[in-house]
Length: 114
Ligand code: AMP
Ligand code: ZN
Image (cartoon, rainbow, N blue to C red; front, side, top):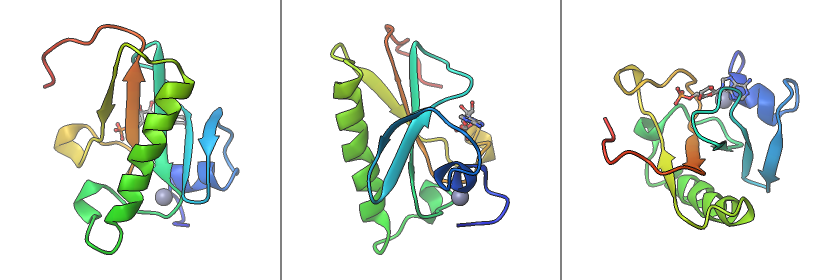
């Protein structure tokens, strides 16, 4: 756990969140400021700042989070599809520097991504 990291504090239960899924390696909760009817964040329990910090040693954790995202999307009945987003760095709009995957769904997405 990293001091002063919002998502480490959420994983530790020190800051409340609306949990939708948890296992030994990841935690998922509803985004506080949803940008789609369903907006969930999936985070590894281990602190990794962003995709830029992934390497051969820890990349399996990201894969685990994506497999969890697939389970969560099914649980949330996002049968029509959904978008997975991971903002990496300030230019991409990353505001919390603990790796997370946004699951966005429940509406028809624009083709434009940026
Ligand atoms: P990003 O901009 O990709 O770093 O995403 C950070 C996300 O965390 C944003 O969508 C915020 O709305 C969300 N967020 C910030 N604080 C909280 C919180 N306490 N609980 C749930 N989601 C949060
Ligand atoms: Zn963290």
